[in-house]
Image (cartoon, rainbow over all chains, first blue to last red; front, top):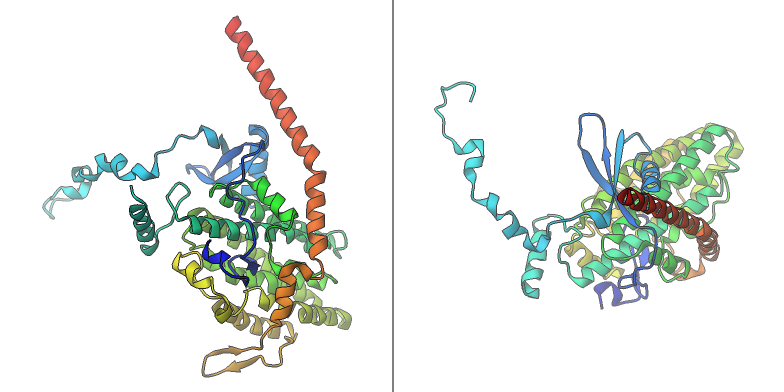
Length: 125
Length: 320
């Protein structure tokens, strides 16, 4: 039982919502069905900037994903270029291992310019 | 790592006001609360297209029609941002839609009221979207990263919704007597359902404490409702309309408005499915979903065919 399941009263939890939290299914645990695959969307806001992850969407194929991404994420000229990538094709580091994974950078203070003490009167350093 | 370690890590992230991201460990109750809240929020955006879509064909000018279409498109977009955020928690969008059309998940009670005149389009923008903004701005700092990021996008667009509504009403109150009466009549109908959008009063809202502890919710229902009422009063004055609450009065001591209690019995009845349009909203959503099935299947068949052809070409290249 979650706290939200524990009584019969409606609550306003978010957004437009004043919604009941009891007797309402979450959908968690439902089996995956064969629906359009998930694409992650990256948008370049303007020339000179990197593509940045903006969200995801479903589409039957990559071309449809591009068109849907345009309609969903750039309705107000937010981009000049879009990448779509199948979510299943992304390889990611594991959050559970983040400490050991990033440990090699943890103890190398000499990689930062502030590590080096230079007399204040020396210019342009 | 033991469960205790995982719980401690989660609590530390929350208390440092950092965001929880999809692949982080999280308590099952946190995950389920978020899925329910984000799904209900997404459903509200999608169902919210109906009362406004009702007026696209009858908008009084091309300008108003174009604005209304853009707004309804935004509602669809907001629904999709939110379904995408819900999917990061391990649910399937298709499954959520099925739960909506089988009435196993809910949406905001406000969309179970009908839009009876074109003034309603303005009042929805002004009051309903205004209330939504009060609710949504704090959600931009929600502890769950994908939800917070979706809310940032939504809030930016919501501001257009509120302003277009207010501008529409300004045009009407500067028009004929009949138009002014329409605005007043519409305001009278929508005021109380809007005040109810923030949910039951704090002493009747037992889940608030847990949601606030988790950083999902940042303010109580009554805090947000007060903020909304204080914002709406001067806006109503600017329009020259009255708000239908005889107890609404400035309290100099609190530096805030006192206001009356909405009819919470009505609220509970509407949430339970007895609102004026509950059945129609869900039936239409179901019809749209079922009528769209062949489109989804055809697009999939086309994609499969193209993929097979591409694979065939590759085989030929290898053979050559």
